[in-house]
Image (tube, rainbow, N blue to C red; front, top):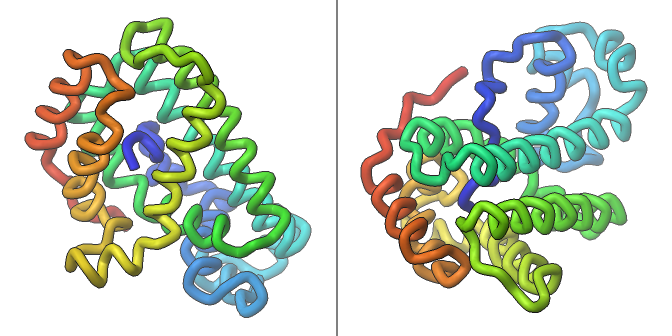
Amino acid sequence: MLNVSSVTLRNQDLTTRARIRGAALARFPQEGFGATTLRAVAADAGVSPGLVVHHFGSKEGLREACDDYVVEVFRETKRAAMEEGNLSNTDFAATAIQTSAPVMRYLGWALARGHEAADELFDELLREGIAASQLGIERGLVRGSDDLERRVATQMAMQLGMIVLHRHLERNLGIDPLTPAGIASLTPVLLEILGGLFTPQVLEQIKATYSEVAIPPVLA
């Protein structure tokens, strides 16, 4: 779960296109692709159905835009964490936790669909994950690997599996891992499992950060 969200305050992007995309990000996982109508998405976004078609062309075009957005968020957050040393920044962690929930919920739904688009989404996330890991190695934050691609692919499958199976975690742990509180609670657990990826100093800094981070209020 660590760093699967954006830190660019995307919740402040209130453009029409962004509002429509945000509404679709929330509705697709709730109702499924087939049951979701453009009219319902438009109502959630406070726009006309014609504007949805104007911006995205079709429901499939809207889904593709949501997938692209998830990859962009993933890319920006990973790069920010590695390039700017934000892994131990409490403000970074707080914003990441707050903005990650809707993106992660959509991602879990998208990957579980068994659709060809899910394959493309995972492959794109994997490419971004490998690039970010290479950057982390260069910055001395992440340990090197004899087979970085295989390591990142396995790591991502483990982490994304938690998102896909979030309901089972919630049943057993009593907390939804796709909420800000759940993310803050389970990130240290995930670090304990994947701690060998980071250098000891960085690992301790991250653990300290997530023990101190204050979860901001839910933003509309």
